[in-house]
Length: 151
Length: 116
Image 1 (spheres, rainbow over the protein chains, first blue to last red):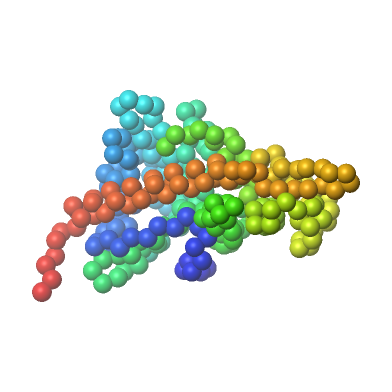
Image 2 (image 1 turned 30 degrees about the horizontal axis):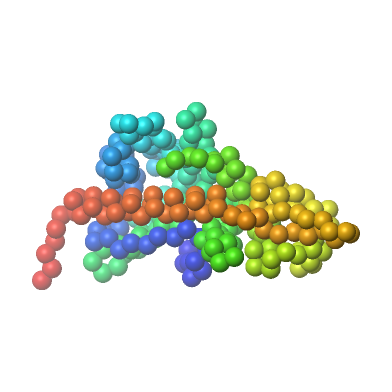
């Protein structure tokens, strides 16, 4: 499994945060900590469930005083503290129906003075690919939309 | 955060979940208008299989067909990927802001260590 992304074909974000990988990892899997940063400004975050085990479900509800609540949910796939966290991700509509499911992969690497966080979000194409932990978006969001933007 | 056009987005995602269909769309995005034969040429799949892929792309609104005499032409729809682009940029903004907040929480949580 190659996690290095020399190709920039996916939705990728990278940060260096002056916190140890252990502490940073906890901010992703401890419900109390997640509630502190998960919701956009102006929203309250309610962690409906967070079962940080492979196969465990998570669901968060984002509540804005002046609008409908929005939920995001998924299932944890990989929990390897303090290095790797992967989970599925889907926005839910107002009836609780989940939209297209994508996968989020967060990698934590120790660097001098903190942790490099690499977040990759991509859609998997089918179950067999997903089960091999080999993700199918060879031409991913960013690549296609870049081609699209130039035409 | 707004979930507009989610239905069409689902069909776009479903259409693009297949590598052959992504490759077909890439070819049309870069190559402009092509005949069905030209589109199919690089792919080692049967004509019925290509036809099925084209139908899925068409139903998702990603490609358009035009017939001129005996020739059938294909091209990428104008704004073919705008639903996907909207989703990607929305998702990117979502994560960028979330990581800002994560960083602030991390700074508030981690005891400050002085380096000598």
